[in-house]
Length: 534
Ligand code: N01
Image (tube, rainbow, N blue to C red; front, side, top):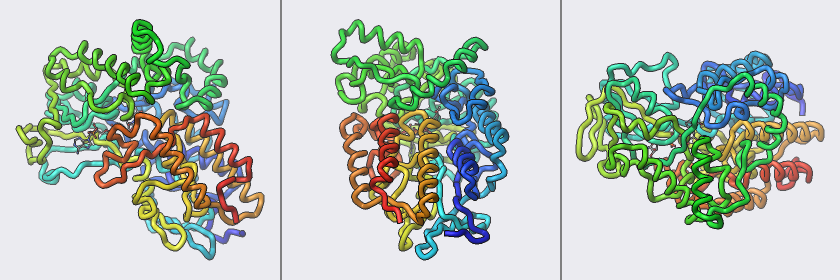
């Protein structure tokens, strides 16, 4: 098919890690493209999430691109877990170094994309009334980009300022002398609470579900350590690619239930002192499969919380119960539990006394009113499906993606969905995505998608889309894998449980990054088995 004027081969939506790399690859392939980004610059997650304390939970040297050896060697990270500003600087550097910005229209939100059967093209519309036609639609919209502010009566009457962590003002917020309320104790709350507490006159934390958290133990990297990482980086990266969660460590062979208690405690303690996700995901392989094993890890953390928090009543409220550890996304923290020992910090347990309304001067729970100058919503996102269904995407016969997924996301490999030909989702639902180190998932998806497009172009193919059978089997497989773990036991955003009315379905693929990578490669090798190519 020959493209006419005003048409491009591909449209990319988003300028985070995924969109930047997609544009880089499309350019290398000599395909015409346009890219749209609703923010005023590159960065995606790191453009929007500027709340105090925001930063990566993956080690800096693996939370970055691998596609350019020069880039890898030139860029030096300052610390183990870089903050938002440093990651954004990195992504801006990547955009400049590879001259990627000129492909993007910034401040331009894609409002809709519709597939036109006769021409085999997508028409993409933006809020600035652009209309572009493209053979391929590549969504790089992120998994956690659709911010969720709960519908609490009275918010419009509030006389102070309120913020969502995922849409933080670029000029920053000064909480000095202010009475602040933070709602939510997920990763964003747990990162921001200790920092806000140090600045605000008073902080009230409104907690619905207590969370487990592991110390990050962030530290600056010495020049020697930076050099050593750069020397070893190829090996480290290769390990990440084939590991379970895209990190430079993996489950141990040993099982918590089979080692003696002293050895187990010693292992937990040593890893705790080291900090980071490795405490959980470099530990015993049965922790996420066997409730008894999981309880051992959970009890270890509960004991740590008791040991840190001075007031036993506050400790009781902070101690998570009722769901297995790490089945809600495990946060890393810097002095989170210690923060509740401060004189200017109070904890409100919303399970005992739920929020009833926002007043002009603060918040009222069932039992008490709290005077506040500012409210921070650390209340999360409509994860994985939200960023896609908030765009009016229509496939064959005008079918809306939102309608197709009203019973839960249905995809093949998390990269495509039947009825939406030539639409590729980078880290879509049904792929490993959020279950590990995002840049690893993103690069694998972009590479696979671009090789698939190259295959279609080479063979003069018009469309690709999954067969009904392949999609059904994939959805069932993703579910079976999740059901074999403890994950479905938690009301998590992985399950869609944080969004009222969202179907309760475990969304990511939990079979491991390496296994998934191999599966995708095999499918491509077998002439894109499970897809119909016309
Ligand atoms: O959101 P969350 P997040 N009333 O959904 C509570 C990534 N991330 O922005 O548990 C009262 O985890 C809710 O309570 P409950 C990471 O993948 C990464 O913190 O539903 N409370 C919960 O406590 C992460 O998992 C990084 O009962 C309400 C909190 O708000 C994901 O983003 C940093 C409520 C939401 O927690 C999302 O994290 C930050 C209501 N109506 C985020 N509604 C790093 O890599 C919700 N809550 C460092």
